[in-house]
Image 1 (cartoon, rainbow, N blue to C red):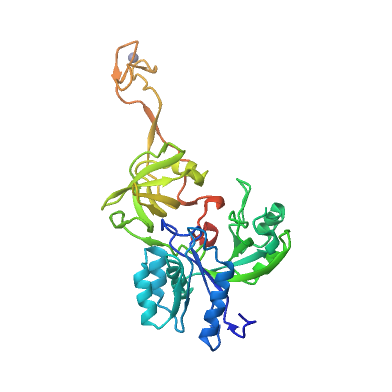
Image 2 (cartoon, rainbow, N blue to C red):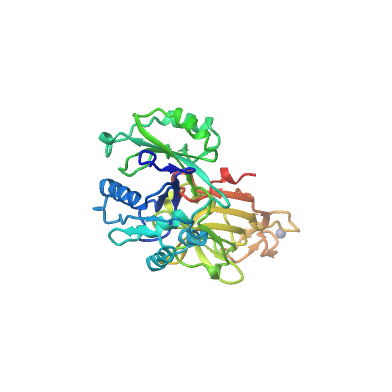
Length: 384
Ligand SMILES: [Zn+2]
């Protein structure tokens, strides 16, 4: 842009949108730039040139679009697109009413993200991502990014997050897709990120950009009662665990959550790994706040994190009752049939119980780094 004679104002923005849209692209992100300069026609032909050169329009999932707007688009357009389903019709209506220039390719849905990206402002929260790009000759080949150096960076620059999953040896800064990105480092402090990048040993970096983003902000979640939950949203809902969490085929853990309005299934899916062990520790009566995306069939909250507010009291049998006369343990008469003293014949239905020890505590639990969504706020960012 600067080469074209335009001045870039602030950082370019990388904005992630509703992660639960079935027809979204992989990362469901859109990029916007705030620039100063005359001659919109020139900008437009420049953008179309870039799209012609780089957009992977052969990919059935890729439906690019661009928007050029002279005025700031309304913030609620962003809010709707990150939390709900924005339609192409309403997007075009808005753009037409503001006299914005735009073009959607193929099914045109890229316009929705482009519009939301311009509409986003970091009113409540923001983070940054330093994205390093590969030399074009290496695109599609295996990325060379040294794991140990990423771990060192992770432990050295503490304002970064989601860099490395130590439990699963997953180097999260490196994408899985065959895109031109070499790695991306996320963090709270823009000035720390070039320093963080300097600690990463990798193949040559062709260029880099520091984006301002809505990643790791929880902008996608909305607080609601259980009856207010709809498919494709991401929600925070408070309720009482209503069933003992149980495993289903595929290693997913499921339980039912209830409030005064309704009940709903919550799930920790297999990719959430050890988070499932936490969920298994929940018991009926526990009061929790559940964060997650809502899946449609069957309607289920796909948990991203939980906040355990109150643990219920549970007792468990520790031994058979003791006969008050003989001071000896009674014998069980069979499952659910009580106990009987074999010396004097005294019977009892009450075994000796103890309050169940819970291995889960009050507080937040989240999915591991390897399963984290772009928009999910890591606990590391939630600490006061
Ligand atoms: Zn007895």
